Length: 323
Ligand SMILES: Cc1cc2nc3c(=O)[nH]c(=O)nc-3n(C[C@H](O)[C@H](O)[C@H](O)COP(=O)(O)O)c2cc1C
Image (cartoon, rainbow, N blue to C red; front, side):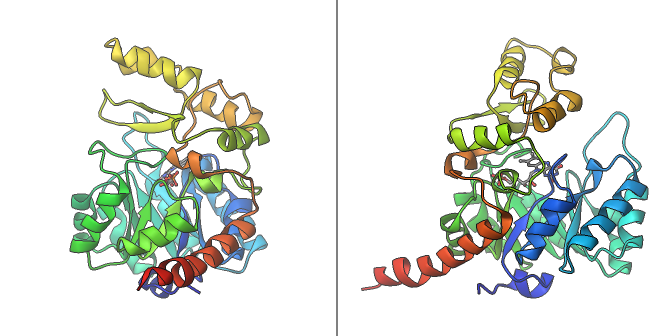
């Protein structure tokens, strides 16, 4: 057992989190993570309406009695979803842990607090983590430059970001980005984190709902197989290398605007990758951790292996270094 401030304060067995993943954070995955003693997050916006989210929460509860949470990502959008109604669905359903991401969670914090919900805020810099601590979140999850999805614009990898954040934060902190095995877990703890968050690693598990061909591509890919799109828009996203992501980067380099790539990066195209296994249909999020992923285990196998290897690593390999 690895016990940290995070496991104590958030009431989970292992210091391992499965972060929100658009189109992927559904009942089967989240319940499998919970059953294995880690903390999984349903992704609210994967559900088309707040009522669908209520049903997905019920579906997860039918699969596990253990705690799980909901991720609500608030990104700038031309037609924003009804965020307030998703918050209501989360609160009414009796969820006790929320992962916020994408923007400042302050407007909704009083509602979460009143409902006794713990808030784990995902951010990408020390200054945003400090701000989140100041406004009263219960923990932060900090994504380094390695991560899948949105790494921010500072380009600071976890090796620097996590200890820099640990030096100034008082609340529990989860290291995120580029972690896929026990070595990453132990390293994160050594850097001052209270646990780890993983996206790409959980994307490539048996219970993740994506097409088998995508999982096999993750196993085949190395740490070199990502692209950073939307750099020119200052809204960087790390996605898997494929025909479409390379084309988007080319168009941006040639001075193109969002209008020039809008169709290529559409959510509908991205979903075809996950649903149909058409690897070049659109863009799909994946991080540098692809270079550390060599199999497609169940969540139970993955978490059990990470925890037991981490204990072994701390006791034997690191213990033996002391003269
Ligand atoms: C397919 C996919 C979709 C994601 N969607 C979201 C999302 O909707 N909201 C969010 O906060 N993070 C999202 N993320 C980021 C993850 O929660 C996590 O922070 C990130 O994957 C950590 O980096 P790693 O992939 O190196 O483990 C997504 C990641 C992946 C792989």
